[in-house]
Amino acid sequence: MTPRNRLLVLLAGVLVLAAVAAAAVVHASDRAARAQVTQAGGPPVGAGPVSLSQGPARRIVFRNMALGPHRDELSTVPATDPGGRRTASGVACLRFYAAAGTGICLQAVHGGIQDTYRAVVLDSRLKERAHYDLPGIPTRARVSPSGHLVAWTVFVGGDSYAGTNFSTRTGIVDTRTGHLDQSLEDFRTVEDGHTVHPADINFWGVTFADDRYFYATMATGGKTYLVRGDMTGHTLTTLHTNVECPSLSPDGTRIAYKKRVAGLPADAPWHLYVLDLRTMRETPLAEPRSVDDQLVWSDNGTVVYSMPSDYGSDLYTLSADGSGAPHLMIEAALAPAYLD
Image (cartoon, rainbow, N blue to C red; front, side):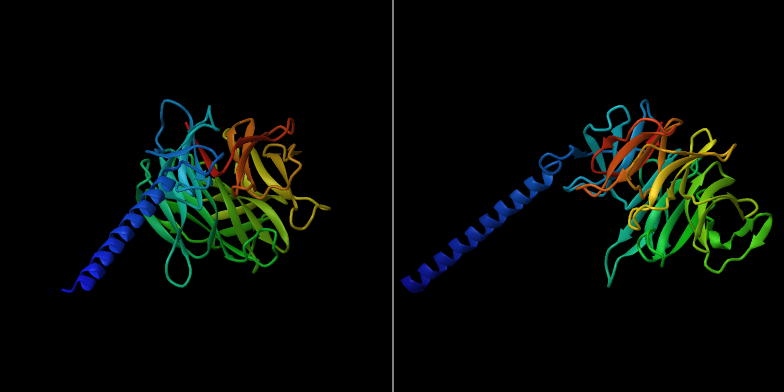
C-alpha cells in the first residue's frame, strides 16, 4: 500500500470514529432530553407504577397532557396534592375512566393508511383484560361503580358535538362475561309511554347508577334528551330535554351536564347545569365559559371538567350548587377518575 493510500485509509478511519462519536453524543443528548420530566416550567412528571386498586389515600388518575416523553400516558397524583409531581404509567389513552379496580382506555392504533381505534379493558395494574375494535373516534368513557360494566362513545361521522352532521355509537361491555352491546340504538326507546323508532337517533355520554341502570344523552329531531337505561329490559326512557353528557352524582340524586343555551355563539353553545332527579329542577353553575366535556364528580358537592389550554387541556373544579367560581385544579390533564 502506498503512503498516499495509507493516509486515505487513516483519514477514513478517523472520519468513521468521528461519526460514531457524533452519533453517541446525539444519542446521549436524546436520552438526556427524554429523561427530562417535562418541558421547562411545566408540571413535574416521572415514570413509575400506577394502580387502579384502592389504597391508603385517595388518588386521581388522568391522561397526562404535559409535553415530554410521558404525554398521553395515564398518570396519577394524590387527591390532596393535585398540582404535585405526577407518576406516569407508560399506558397511553385518548379517553379514560376507572372504578373499583377496572379501567377503560380508548386508544389510537397507529399504522396503515390511517389510525384505527380500540377500547381496552384494564385490570387494577393497567394490564389488558380484553379489547374491542371501535368504529370511530373516541370521545367518552365510563365504568360502573362496581367495575362490572364499561361504556364508550365514538364519533362515526363529524368530529364535534357543535356540528350538525355527526353520528355516534355507544357500546356497553359486561367485564364479567365479555358480552358487548355494540350500540344503544339496539335498545327499545320509550318516550311519553310509547315506543319510538326515530331514524336519526344518536346516543352518547353514558353514566352508570349501578349494574342495571344508567343515564345517557339521546338526540333526535334536532333535540337532545336525558334518557334512563335499563340493562335488564334493554330499554331507554326519556326523562328531560336539552341534556348532553350527563354525569350522576355519587349519591345518585343529581345529574351534572352541559346544556345548549339560546343566544350563545354557535361554536360555544353550552352552559353547565345540575338537575335534581327528584324534583327535575335545574341549577345553573357558576362557569361563564362554554364547556364541552362530560363532568366528573369529585364528591357530592364538587364537579370537575376540562377546558382547552396551551397544553391541550386543564382540569377545573366547581361547586355543584351554583355558588362560587371555577378553580384551576390540574394543568395539562384530561379524563380524570377518582380512586378511593
